[in-house]
Image 1 (cartoon, rainbow, N blue to C red):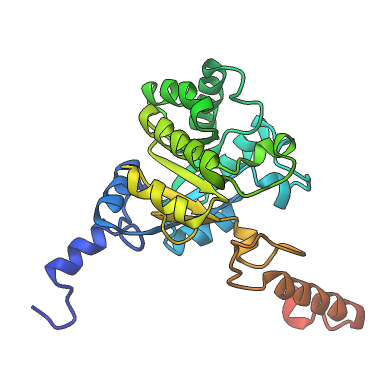
Image 2 (cartoon, rainbow, N blue to C red; image 1 turned 180 degrees about the vertical axis):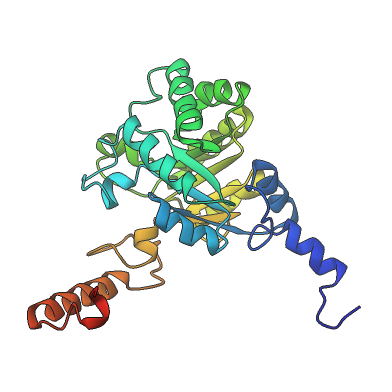
Length: 289
């Protein structure tokens, strides 16, 4: 064997690993289940457009979430509540078009599934048929179990979301940590087991104590995805504008900023404006003859 050639073990790892592995097809729910079995942690980021999604896809992020968080960080809303199905279909379709490998999961926005399982099915079908996503996500544990069960029976992969559920911001009176105290912890465990029993392939745990998130992860056979759930979950998700330093002002405690794109873009815009003001742009090399 050539010294530079990968070993059989390396070849196997390259085809099974979620990060930098599968590259000839979309990541599937089976890939995520297998990662849980072998103890491989994986990352998820939000994406709302083809260009950004393509960057994350090329970076090897195995799962991209078209979150209704677009309401806060792209559409100018104060909460996720105003986001519509039409907006989610449009954004999701763009992310699908901009990617080749990542599994694309799309949020069912507020008001698109709470009325009945039939309503959830209708709108999940829109996201799969019109946008081409590979899975949908909806909030709620026990209260959403019937909808999850119907969707899964119909062939729709469902990622559940429990703990802090941002669509319930008005009922919660903000964004408090969930699962504190015995009663809160017991309810979170019931919610987690309910969504697993209903057939969800994964569950997001948002803003819950790290010890509790780790306990849920140990008790579930499906992957857990933490956002403010500490290091004990199977995966982690962040809103990309938070992760990349685009968000102005204070960000949640659970966010780690890996870049300062807000400053980079601001500096670029100021430099451009100055070049235009002084006549430095466009120069000869930017002009046609």
